Image 1: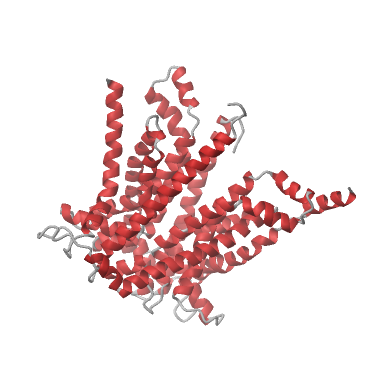
Image 2 (image 1 turned 30 degrees about the vertical axis):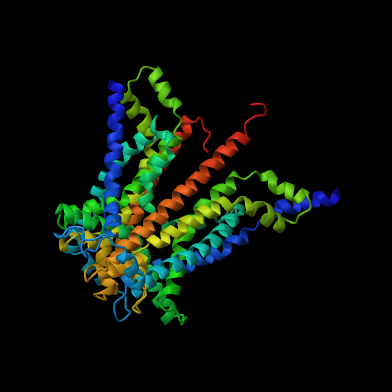
Length: 276
Length: 280
């Protein structure tokens, strides 16, 4: 009996936190250190001294235009994805359709296929339709690539939603339009937010798509940074531009978190404090 | 009548989206059996032939890229699953610093991929020139970077399973005389296998799909994955055998996912009927 109690107490003290230590080391070398290196290169001259010249070279009118264009492409892609994905998810999660799991799966399957192969397939199709490479083709390609990433989180949230809220709303006399805007839409906000984060920022790096479907006018910031490191070999300017992008990432993350928290709070209130 | 029309309209909407998604893929599949070099060229479809499939296996560079893709994907996904699972367990028991580790691991998830890619490139130079570790960009470096890139996703898939575990299981193991470590490996870890499998699948597909990190970290020795091979050769002369490869990949993805889902549904149903009270 004594022995057992001893074992129990010992067992409760047992905390294998050291299991996480290798990963902490990995994080330091492969996540933190690279960011420090980006910072160092961004503020370093070719001879090793401190400089702000890289930022002067980055913050030119041409580059600001490039950044704005990238933001524009990302926004447009996100909005179109949302406009297609939301109704699709809504239908898939609604009554006769939510029985067919395979039907929903069909919409997600392309996500698992290599995206470069999918984009060259799209390229052939656009060729048949006589659509030239350029801005329009780029947007089509971006939407084609990112749609499943918008669809999946919204669909998941709508499927998990407690349908009795809708019944309650109808019972209380709201019509389907009011029910949608007052109940369904707010409850699916979390899915929308994670969908947006899975589309908006990744577009900045999706220069493979602009490379395959765009023209010289559709270069995005991700492609420009790649170019600075490979073709132009000006790492200082490339790092400075990466640094600017990094700040943008954290800014959008911060905004996303604000929405996420408010949503989590609202959800907790609705569920009577029983947060999962 | 109104209700019926509404139902039809919703089916039509879904059909239009589905067709838009699959039209390009179907086009490639159909043309993988064509003798034509270019799709939609004025001469039409040409003859029905399997020659592109034969050609695929004769294109050494493309075959090498395919093997690289699979090898890097498997190796990095295995490593990520191993590291990620242990980390999730460690974090589960961690009191202090848990938030900080989670935050740092999330940096790779939310960061723009191009910035991550640049960071890895600068790190490889730093390790080689400053620390003097003889690391060369290439397959090994890609395995390392892909592991770092995908481990957070494994942690994200395994952690919820840990939180769902019945804490009494651990106590039970101790009560039956097992030491804490043994309990961990024989009682706790087996419960995580489902999460580990999902994490592995996620890490594997993320690695297969990666372009940005690979493109900047593959080095100049001619190492390619499918993504970079296709991208590099697009402007020059892309081998039409790529249509055969796309078809094969699509069929594999389709079969794996449908089988996986059927198994999952069966399991869910079995669990449902098992959890039903007796006599019902």
